[in-house]
Length: 177
Image (cartoon, rainbow, N blue to C red; front, side, top):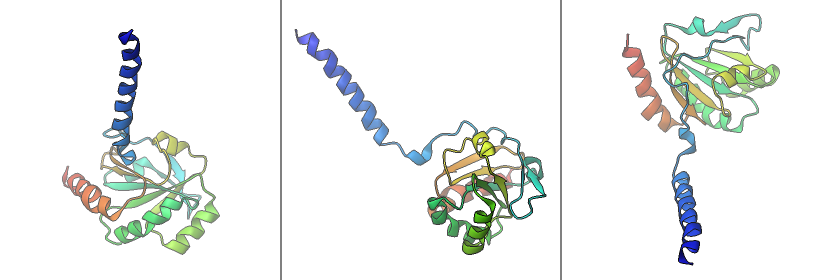
């Protein structure tokens, strides 16, 4: 009779343990299967010059950031001043991936809030974002000179993340041959 009650109790304790473990995880630290793998190939029109394409090959030979953003993204407004300030230091080029947005809205947004991007490319249907494994905007990828993804920031880039995580990784990659 006692064993009959022990099985549900053991299952309950096991489920409670999994729940407690899950509640202690940081949702911004979702591992990306693309870390240390080549960035997906792309060729997309530039936001400001739609007749001109930018591809992954155009960025090879330099360390750079790909920042996925949209004018409709509330969290992008939170990180945008951080990116504008960082861009003024010219440490690495920042390429914007304007995700599932209307180009007039995106251009107006950059005019209003500032433009930290060397250029923004238009991912109107979101296919390149899917290739990069984007969960939602904003997301930022650090890509090395060979076109390999070395870091992924899920959610807004904060001053703390920039200073303590992203900049040290950039310096390390810039020093690598």
